[in-house]
Amino acid sequence: MPFLTDMNRLPWCSTSARGQRLLPVCALLICALWAAGIRSQQPDASLLAITHGPYLQLPTSTSVTIVWHTNRPCVSRVEYWTSDSSHSAARAELARPSTGVMTAVSSEHGLIDNDRTSHVIRLTGLTAGTTYEYRVVSREFGGYEKQHIVKWGGTVSGDILSFTTLDEKKASYWFAVVSDIHENAKRLDAVLAPLDWKRTDFVVFDGDMVNDFMNLDQPFTGFVDVSVARFGRAIPFVYVRGNHDVRGRFARRLTDYFPTRDGHAYYSFDHGPVHFVVLDSGEDKVDAHEYYNGLVAFEPYRREQAKWLADDLRIAAARRARYRVVLSHIPPYDGTSRTGTAEEAFAIRQVRECWERPANAGGVDLWLSGHTHRYAHLAPAAGRNRYHLVIGAPDTLTRVDVSREKLTVTLTRETGQTLDVITVRAR
Ligand SMILES: [Fe+2]
Image (cartoon, rainbow, N blue to C red; front, side, top):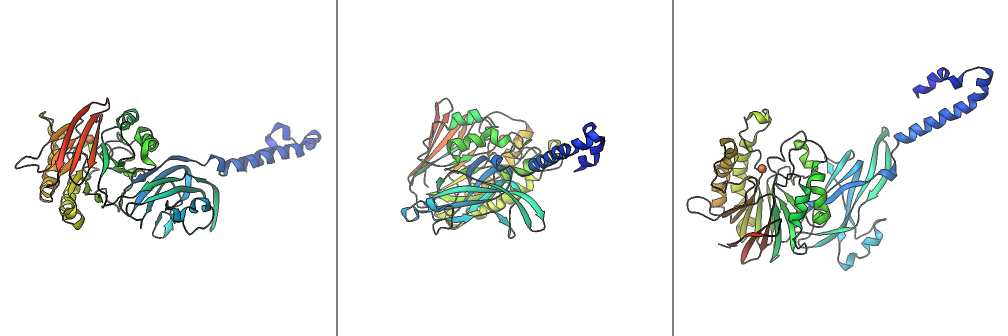
């Protein structure tokens, strides 16, 4: 309280007789100001809020990751339960321990996260093809009063929502792909508008959703909030990193918004008759380019993924799937007859040189990319790609109808115009 030591300097706090009469009033005033100051430093529970999300990420048949953001650091949990009748009481019993309600938290080396405003919680041990209800809960963490005494604030809970896990046995479904939105939320909303969400099991954001990560609100205003409003609380999106996602001051914090499953941004998952492979194509120019200030190492990273891709396409799930689909932001071919600069062509060439051979050997049927901002379809061709390559543009929606008999890829413009329909049959 440094202002108390300066009390005598205040004209209305002199030590004259009149001043002495005023002293109690003055002291009260100062006490009130001091108390108000203390209150303003304490957490105001009424202001604690979930600011963005929740949204679902990294779906598999047995797990999903739920992400949301609060305006203050919190300790968070997800409460979830199956939505079948045997747990119908769970909804009513959330406030107290219930046999039907499970809880998941985020911890590292045994310590539960307590100082984060982005909350990333992975639910594991789920059952394939099962609908779960869930709600997110965050309790404000105001730090330590002393040693083991924590200053807790208020608690905020989300709505009761639901999601359904993926299922290798599912016979048919849709998934949708958009890319290169570059934070144009209005365009994303228009592109997604025609989708039938009852038939869409997940959405792929195929890179460059962020347009160089320079302030922490960009993902929210650019596409996350629109996605949450349209589908993201109940239907997961698969985040494939593009070259603009890995640029900017906060590029290294991208995982606070779009986490990895096991520390790698390249991974695979299965749904119905399809084995999906997500590849992380990185920047678009040579690592030594002056634009990167010596701060990137994507060339060895692509080679590392080439080995992993070859191995992944040999695993049992990949071999038994009727289709193998690769998702990468940068495509292995430009897809047009234009001659770009050598700088622009570099990453496309390295993607092709590193990943096409294992993709061909592993029986990849369809490869979905973005990056060039021009729609293209390359049918399988002797001596090069044995798969269909489909490159989406910023204003296109790629919808893939999956069945055991075929994959039907339909591309539409945001205007509603159908650009192309491509059929991929099982080999
Ligand atoms: Fe790109």
